[in-house]
Image (cartoon, rainbow, N blue to C red; front, side, top):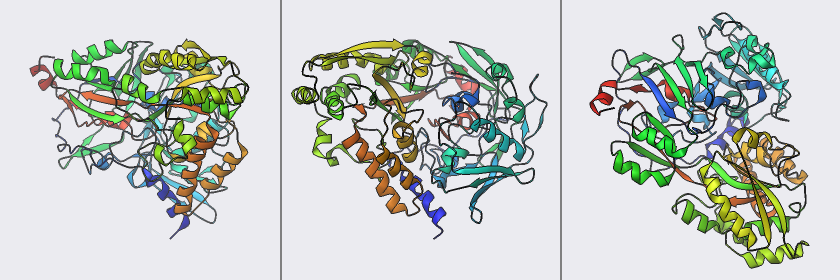
Length: 569
């Protein structure tokens, strides 16, 4: 078997729950479907961080519905189709579920080693005053986009080092020439966080202009038409969008709606009230505390639950005292009663250990009971053992440290008082530093980042989660963890072409971080709920067709306005 074809199979480790509900067949829309879809998205409390994608902002795929990628997830495998992928995963599309986006087809070739993308014809950039005229999307746009992104001062180190160069070979063939094979190439260049394609005309703008939402353009399903910070982002349907969908044998042009409104709602209770009153059609992130009430007061709502796609933890700065000592880091875990947090704050739902590897990846995930005894103990509450370890490390009287926490996450803000009490029991004083998201995020990896950093970090996929959080110097490594042995293990696995050997390496690395490195305090991962009204059609709770990318999902939704009116909304 071709080694490069074989290597890609490691991505199939995602386990789709056998309990996925069987959904009714998609309902055919009327002749002129439409409606403005009002959402509280998965990140409903957070404004767009920046409109400049060259800043390597992870949230761009979520906010920039005007962008397309080379590849996306095929929703025919979703709940309304073959029902083998719920499209909840935060940044993991198995190769067998790939679908062409801007690329109609792609192929890994040798001599020389390369990936060829055959691009769609008759795809057009939207005209934008002061930026560009309407014109056709061509291969040179792909080349210049990746070159511009790599030249950014925010480029993630080593991210595209496996690419020797990009070339346009004709108007509709873009080729990535490789200096080495990368088993995670789909995530890195085709459907991941940082590869939504923007035109050269936009890249040529000044930094100030690129940060201006009025200058944003793309080939995607929507055009951004309004931004009111702290209130809303409004997207109008792109009437020239190239994609279609087939329902009951009939083909429809997308989007099926008139547009999408992101409602930015800082207060959690207000977001629930907006859903209950019908001001929101869909709410993508509801905590368990509100579900029973909603089922009583709004019984017509549809619900879907899932384990959150982020791990929750305190990143401990391993480059500074006291957390440069692994004994202290172990003690920080032993001091916390994780099961009590799960029972009290999460209603007994969720998962104790869901990071680095997600419990969704059953062939790679190592359960707590299969870890070594020293690691298993970190998921029990052992304050006396914690004090012993602190004394061994030279801190018999404990110490004081700062913890940064984002005000944007209710779970985190509810948890910090419990954490503070647990640490007081072992003589550790924790000073809570609460910040708005922008300030919180900007201080990650900065010199003034506190010794402790309470955060959620996306599960991504096996290679990406190990790289971003634990490889030396990476942008999303808030523990400042650096280990030559681990870096070498990761690089070796990335280039391994034997799937079984590669999976064994991935499991070993996950266990190494938990059992030996201990760069963080693991905390329970939440269960969350998605809710939508019956008038929302052609939707089954799907969230992402790429790395936090919802645009093609939204484009397939239509609203039954008559039903909404009949229900009194």
